[in-house]
Length: 329
Image 1 (cartoon, rainbow, N blue to C red):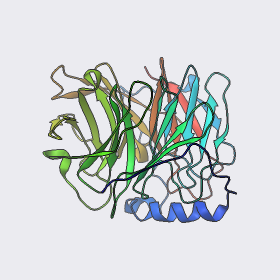
Image 2 (cartoon, rainbow, N blue to C red; image 1 turned 90 degrees about the vertical axis):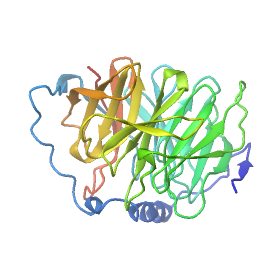
Image 3 (spheres, rainbow, N blue to C red; image 1 turned 90 degrees about the horizontal axis):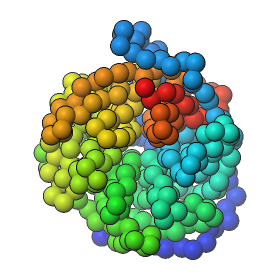
């Protein structure tokens, strides 16, 4: 049922404002009801909260019509996606600059991103298109256009392991695996049916962010509707609880060692969670906030710095879109 289309060149497509409106309209169908109103104000943080305001910075994405995904590249390079247009921006965290890198063909979307720096590839989740896109990070050329799911689908986020890329679908109890060879060659997409608590599908967003631990032998997924994190065995699709307490508005997640950073979009915070060795429990050790957060959705880690994309869902007439950096500690 899955098909793969490969292309070694980029179509030259003139960008129109209309195409962004169409793509965002398709995305809006899947947004929670709260998406129709402005994001709620951030509650006063408890005593354990770290705001790190002196180190916070903002990097504009010039000309972006929306924002959602962010990925770390080589060195201080980052990639950020225009949700509605599917365009990709490339920036430099040290220089504090970004510019349009890939002017995507009409009809695409860019949700979660991950960069394979070894093979110079950028993997992009295609949202309601049911597709994933792969680009060459040296040239911006399209490497592949992959059909992951048909029917009701929202391909939301992606993580990379040594074996390949794993994608979530917010509308189905499935993950999708795209094998990546030693020299960057791509295999055919495979569907992984989930069982256990992560397989719950309710109206709205379900599976969302995804990351991996234990050298890719275990995946961790965020489930927005359940306000929870789960482990997933990538071989069997069996999932299990990570007991953390409720994580409202959980979106993108990122693991580093035994720590998971969980972005909670509409409450404008990132929870830093310490995982138990057996991955059955997680304790929120810190809550990171910033006055620059405006519904952050995804996160990338650069040493001791977090970089997040401000999606600004529900913000009326946002004054542009940007990437925000804060301290991870």
